[in-house]
Image (cartoon, rainbow, N blue to C red; front, top):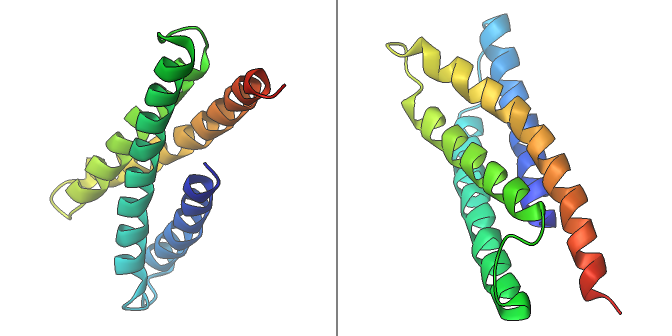
Length: 129
């Protein structure tokens, strides 16, 4: 989870720089947009990996799902990550809605990461003796 949050923070920094460059109409370093896209792709994959690890671990330990609100929090974060990644791929001059959707999704995603972290901590406490 730490890597996914670190990825999100790196995406926040690079995305903020991209947005600032757009607003100030200044040149963007050539490497920044590819870094942002690659980091986003890796973060989406990390979140999906965490989903599968959580599902397999929960089924292995409890035999079923749904005993914790962490499942809902995790599914929310997965949905938001996929929506963010999809909207990022749609961004173009002909689709101005995509940038707005991408930015708003990432703002909500911050709250999702907080929610999944808090509920995840509660789940971890159950595993510890």
